[in-house]
Image 1 (cartoon, one colour):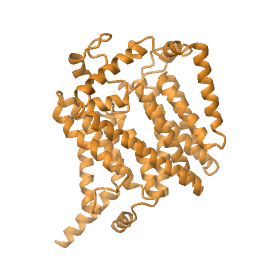
Image 2 (tube, rainbow, N blue to C red; image 1 turned 60 degrees about the horizontal axis):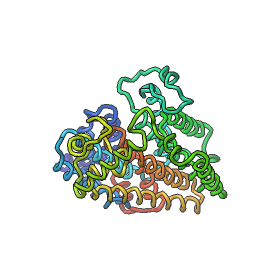
Image 3 (cartoon, rainbow, N blue to C red; image 1 turned 90 degrees about the horizontal axis):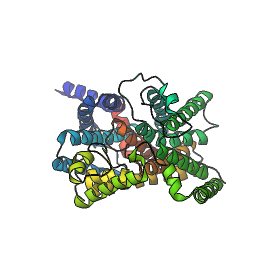
Image 4 (cartoon, helix red, strand yellow; image 1 turned 120 degrees about the vertical axis):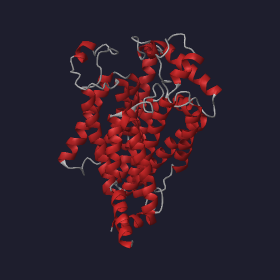
Length: 430
């Protein structure tokens, strides 16, 4: 009996120590093939229980636990109020898997070396996203005059499961500042090959983001990179002044109304200022009527079309609120919005502490990750003002949780938190 127990404990400890790779495979599979999402959720639940059994606790404690807990508490609520269980269950599972993988990474990153590995991972993810995007995005559109649709249409479409250009831009926009922050701060410490990998990642992500012609993403990227320069260089504030003067000059010379029309998408009513305002008014009406529960994840169109019809769109034409904060509120009510905003603020606080501690202690990785995440957070929120693709409606939504996991994991390592738990992990591995 004791031998059987020892074997079980060793097997459980082995699985717990390799959770990152097993869960990583399940998560990647669920992103590529949506039918695998329930299996990823089951695997995530098993690892929650396994950590409790092996390590004596469900997870490392993090600064965002209470906010994540509130967000998870809204899952049964959204499943209760939904009128389309299939749509809502899929998005609820995607949220649960994203949160679970966040904690998988946080529990796995126990050293500065593993923090660096996650940073390298983001550079490789950026290259992978751009590689997949080149051959899977439907490039047959024209939003910016100097990028004709015919030129983009020449790119072969080799992957049958097409990626929406705006979705791809929405994820690249917060990864670019992170990878840039790591590269800039650690330029002298990185090897020649590492510089090439990070440089290629930044260059390809930026090029593809421009090709997507997502103006919201491009504006968010420019502002976040200006912010990165401002906080990394002693006289970086000069760039903010120059940029502000340039924006003011553009408004004076072009005119605010005309500038807004230039930033809209004349090929689609959804892209115009009037179109977005009408969509946002529908979202606000839904939030006003369902403030505590929302209407169910993913039901902006199915519920909104019959109850809150839009004059400028046919039914089914607008699947989401085209605003990240409004979309979270529509899906999960104001409690969900409070939880999401709290997570965003607490992640930003962790990044600021990493940035400050890294600069003070001359630790390039803490410094670079802190700066990159801070500016990535700005890009995520700015892009979210005109789109909601980083919420649970699309399969890559887990990338936001991976992005958030890095500063929290690094905060646990560099700020020397949870020492007792780390010792317990080492004892089990031994």
